[in-house]
Image 1: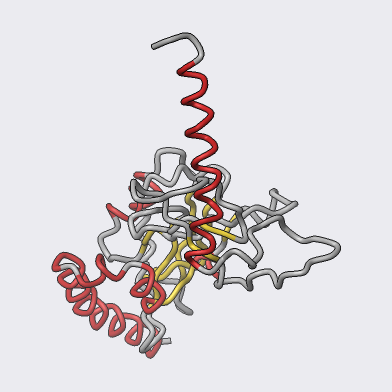
Image 2 (image 1 turned 180 degrees about the horizontal axis):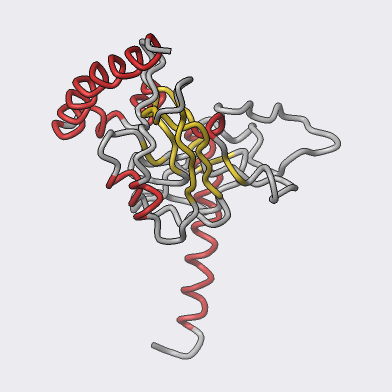
Length: 223
C-alpha cells in the first residue's frame, strides 16, 4: 500500500461513520430529539423520563457512531445479566420463601451475607429470617447463593444503579431492601420463569410451604 493511502482510508472510515450517524438519526426519527448530556441550564428538548430512555443495540448491523449517551440512552439489559441478590416472596399470600438455612452465607466466597433466625413466642426456632443483610460493596455478583438455595428464595437482580454518596449504612441492604415479589422476578426473567426447571422448583416450594405454615401455626397456638 503506497505511503499515505492507509492514512486516507482510515480517515474516510471515520468520516463515513460520522455521516452515517446523522442518516440513522433522520431515519429513526431522532434527528431533532435530545441525545444525552445530562441536566442542562437551558434545554430546548424534553429529557426522557425514567423508563423512557432510548435503548441502543450495538450489533453487527449498527451504523454510525457507537456512543451511548447514558443516562438518556441505555444499552439493553439482558435476562442473564446479574447484579445483587434479592429475596423472593409470593404475591398471592406474601409468603417469604427464605427459611434461614444459612446455606447462602456458607457458599458465599466473599462472605458478604449474614442473618439471624426468627424465634417463636415460646423461644423455639422458627423457619424464618429475623434479619438478613448483604453488603453490596463486598458482593462479587457470582450468583452462587441463588444457585445453591434449596428453597428457590434467592435470585439475582438486574438493577445496577446503586451508587450514592454514603456507603457505611446505605450500602448494607437489609431484609426490607432485599425483598421483591415473585411477579417482579417473572417480569425481569420471563424465560427462566417459564423454564421446566423453575416450574418444578416452584412446585417443590409450594409443597414445603404448607408444611412450613402448619408448623408455624402449631407453634403459635401452643403459646
